[in-house]
Length: 427
Image (tube, rainbow, N blue to C red; front, side, top):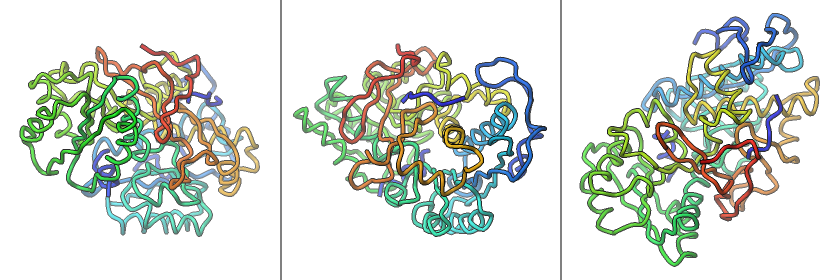
């Protein structure tokens, strides 16, 4: 289907300063219905011709490997299977995945880049350390477009980088814009790991706080500590209107739990998109009152808004082909990447789809991003010419669901709002 105009943390922290994978996805999973759940004839057996190949760089081993990061693989597999089984591939040609494990190292990212470039993949999707500095130059030389979670300056600026979301570059300032304009915040605290320099992030957030006559300051947490009580006490002492969190995993869950004990309302806590993850974050927090009403600046429409056509397609495909509920932002992002490129190929002609044709479209056109807003490189902010989709949607965790908040998309650079598509449900 055509996407509509709706609109991990360890690796993201660093950004502050396989059966059925290598082969064509025609023999994996169920052949049940896709899309909105209606029955459809399985088309995988009819596919022929030269495959279109998705090059995948992920961290399946090493220090950053986790179930959360693996959602990038799961979402990609589901999208490939859905396209092959339900949409007839890329105009009758099979879609396949060429996967490479970077082992969570920059050297591994370089090895993967050389492998995928030599394999002549059509485009690259990925979430890994070292893509910016080590892999992008290889892909640029080979003329292969890269869609990654941007966690390095190169991924924000390279001519061959086309991230379908702005990542930390736009999420944190968008969070600040929302807090000052919608919550009336004048004093904010950012709780962040000491893994990297947070000064640039604080400066980007203060653009909006200073307009409101206030400011945001950072409190750093040692990456290895399990006791956050000193940082929580320090944060509460400043009497903030809003607390922003950039922590990960157990530390993030602990922060919410300890803030609740201190009487700080989760309705005034805002986290970035990587925390919008049911199995890997929400399920870890106890009691659930510690996150009830908490806010998140997300890149995609809530995965629980199944009345929205893109979300219905995504959730059905994840359940059908991966037996996964699809309630993670990385699952959405990876699925969206493949589906967005499928829509580009369908619009411009499957027969002529290639790395070069994809780059041309992404450099010259406004492209609807599946489950998100749109990619328009011409409207990218200064200093980050690759960030063609700087928009963020705000969601709350309410009653075990992730609920879109009214107000439309928020531009993380200007603070301007863009209206939601009418199919998006808010609450």
